[in-house]
Amino acid sequence: MSSKSPVVDWATDWSHFDSKWVEDPFPIWKELRAQCPIAHSNRFQDGAYFPSSYEYVRAIAYDSEHFSSRRIIVRESKVDLQPNPPITSDPPEHTGARRLLLPAFTAKAAEKYEEKTRRVCRDLLDRIGDSRTCDAAIQYAQHIPVLVIVEILGLPAEDGERFRDWIHRLLEIGPVNPVVAKEALDEITDYFRAQVAIRRSKEGDHIGNDLITFLLNATIDGYPLTEAHLLGTLRLLLVAGIDTTWSAIGASLWHLATHASDRHRLAEDFSLLPTAIEELLRAYSPVTMAREVTKETSLGNCRFSVGSQVLLSFPAANRDPAIFDHPDEVRIDRTENPHVAFGLGRHRCLGSNLARMELRVALEEWLKRFADFELAEGAIVRWSEGTVRGPRTIPVKLKPR
Image: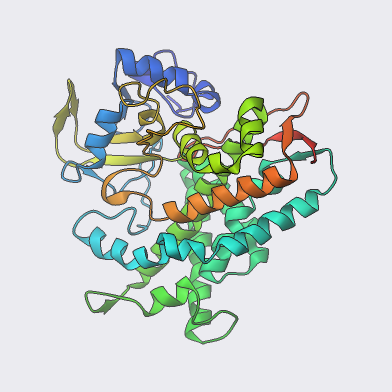
């Protein structure tokens, strides 16, 4: 059965590609959490499980003995894809691969890109100008992380459209079309191979100051990175640095466009932004990862079979009433908020500091320019499918200050 065929029973035949799941997954997760906290589906090769509770998501995320990170996307069929360390690495290889990147993504490191992020946001808003309508996703949210990550990696800003195309093909089309996924990955790999060659020949701009050059000269345990490791890490940094953040920015703008009281409170009092950002991340967490079962094990009343996968939904965990009071309500002044939007365990998102900074700046600059806005009449908001969930279109009506 195709993963996109309509689901009849979510507990025994779930699919995260079903239109109901894509458009509004929260009622589905709520139902599963109450009736079948670990659902199963045979739509995917070797089967796949879906834990919907915080407890089970956390347990699996911390258990690398039974659950491997080598397959991080639930697909219709197995695909022999190249590794992207450290996200696809298990211990002990994971430790060195992650440690290498940590200094580039500390809170202090993220601060270095705040002014650049503000300039990007202001330039995008200037292009919108005095228009009374725009698409907040296409004209704003989707550009911000692209133009920040090119600064970090030392890539040409004009290549942004190529990056967006690769992400669409890899993360939205790719999970149900392995040919498209492989083509996109091959193109990304060839692109970075060329960028590495430029740096090795010491030609071009930014040589010596960007993260690609750093990785090219880096070592783990005294050995330089293999080409496969280097290119895999660069693929990861590009894709993970863009889609997750633009989805979070877009979802936040969608929420504010559809919740006037929250919009007005934030526009009038930016001191609410820190708690608001954490709550928006909790409520609209964009990232769902996967694990592959490598050893038979049990959790609750569920037996996990070797070779199957687990859709590890941090967004579902963030809606668990056992952890969060009134989890389906967005409370921008929520102070107790142990959300897991950035994941759990050794694979917790490296770029969380950068993502938080970009989200804060993006909302600040937007609200300075457009304190009042709402969905345009007849607006169709399209949400992405697959590993990362976020609004791909947000048609809004603008009311400049």
